[in-house]
Amino acid sequence: MIDRLRGQLVEKDPEGVVVECGGVGYRAAAPLSTLRALPAVGEECVVHTRMVVREDAMLLFGFATREEREAFDALVSVSKVGPRLALAVLSAMTPGQMVEAVARGDVQRFAAVPGLGRKTAERVVLELKGRELVAAGGGREGGISGGDGGGPFMEAREALTGLGYSLEEAEQALRDVPPQETVEQYIKAALRRIGGRR
Image 1 (cartoon, rainbow, N blue to C red):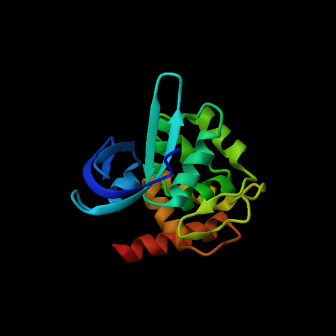
Image 2 (image 1 turned 120 degrees about the vertical axis):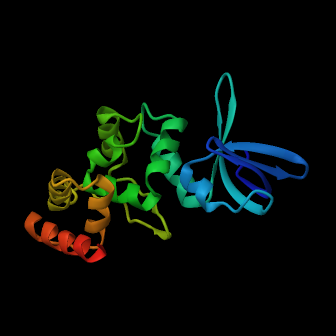
């Protein structure tokens, strides 16, 4: 099992990376977040890896952080989610955002990932709820709560997207808002933040 690579980054493209270690180049598929986090080609890097062995292939997947690798492991443990789909999720959101989306029961956030689909998104949320996952930036989340998550938060996000803001703009504005009791309070606070940025 190859767990970690440390060496010179010799290739970096949309499909992944090649890291040369002791004269051997290892190709690892990687999410976009890892590609952005790694240094320029020619520099030394560390890539945390996960090897997936199938009947017809041995595939290596690389990640900039252990948190990304653990999120990948959690995703591929969900039925109907393979390694490529897990990479698509991690290209669309950070491990921390994934933890938040699962905690809120946010099926729409997962369904927005290209290739995932609503039914698979529902399965991801259902199967990952209650599991202990790692959020970006360190410490363990003490398990993902099984409650209904941020009902007013998600309703406010839907209202903002209904007003013409993209899902990303709505989430970014709402992320900075402290917990509120009502949808209206969330929307007012988010609109103030959006207005302040323009």
